Length: 302
Image: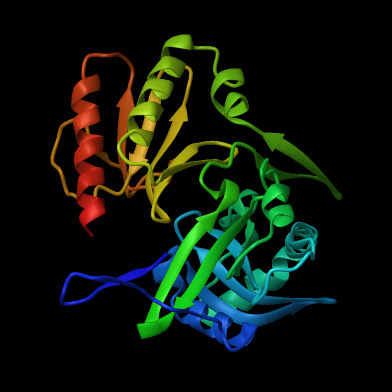
């Protein structure tokens, strides 16, 4: 319920309006993808064979493409089936979208520049029925739902639906010659099974709980190599465990100076962010938590 405060302090419910059409909804979202989802708009109605995608966007932080579809009504159509079909179609025609992007933005990126394991599809609609929401309860397809509601006085409500907040499994494409094999990765695969060092794993789990505890809207996601944390679709931190240390990367928007923070903007690294903190023991653990807290407090105000 969206309410307006009148001069006499009385609350009045703001009337809900419908979008004129799916195209009206699409145009509104495309003009504001950076605000709504922190994505870069690429194009509308991109076609590959028999599939026409409403919107193609780019997550510049993850370097991954995003398909966005719009529904103006809630019906019984299996959007998950549609999402899987569209996502697979894009993954089977990587060169087409990369060539289009390069021509559109006058660049020369190759296919390997992008993280195809993070490719996802987003559905935006005024509502989703219980069957649609239930279909992504254990989301292994990297599909997300967002509800958008239009109100009087030019007000818009935009919020995630269902299991968007924590994607415990990631659908990753592993290319072997001409055969595509899909493997599912969980947090245990990335942190526990791939790292036999119990001490480093404990550092990760403690920091993970600390970061998620800073705010209820901080979300966690997994890639093949690292774990990431987002707030309002902005990447806060990415973490990777190795045998001897826990690595944290971030962009240091607070410009905090500390000898524990290393500038790696000119070096190759696995995580997202130009600044690196490594943890090998507990000597500076509380200080590192303070750095993380200060960075989040700063980003929250932006």
